[in-house]
Length: 226
Image (cartoon, rainbow, N blue to C red; front, side, top):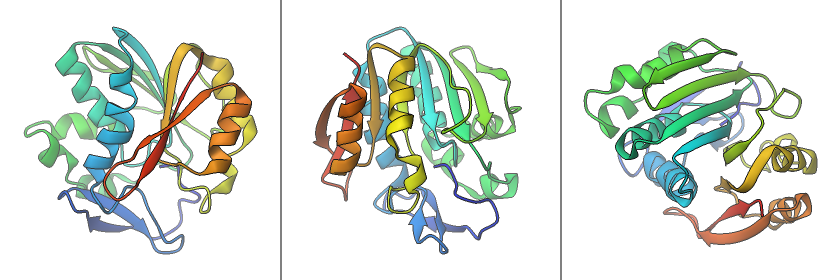
């Protein structure tokens, strides 16, 4: 998730599925669900988003690179299904490598792929990097409200911190900008199911549905550009 500031304490915590998350005491906020970090990311972004598209080549935009978990799961899925992914991710304050190295995603999710997980974080910012045959990464260091966004986006992972923790990330203008840059039939998914967020998405032009959320969360949102 995109950080509000890079000068705060982050605590490593174990979640219910055995994977790590980071907790920011100052914000009383976690990067991923304590009910299962990997489980949440797979449910919200891979299953409800990536698997909802049948295209063989997909442009993904992630709002909030954070721990790199969503990117890592997408990379692994791209290899399994042999789909080319062009992955853009916006992050204002990247995590330090010592924090990254403490996360257990590389060992837990796919044995022997820790080097690939770390490669996502070691990739240079603001340039396109081909990480694997099926996964290209372009990390954008900046504020998603003001930075340049790619065109012809097929899929958006909206993974900013919760609206009550980071309200500046959830506004009508960002949803309007995303809608304008997405392809017809493009999908946006987020763990958030708040009515105010759903209304902003609908105002932008999306068809929005509430669908079952990951463990510990009753609902989430999926929006489609018609």
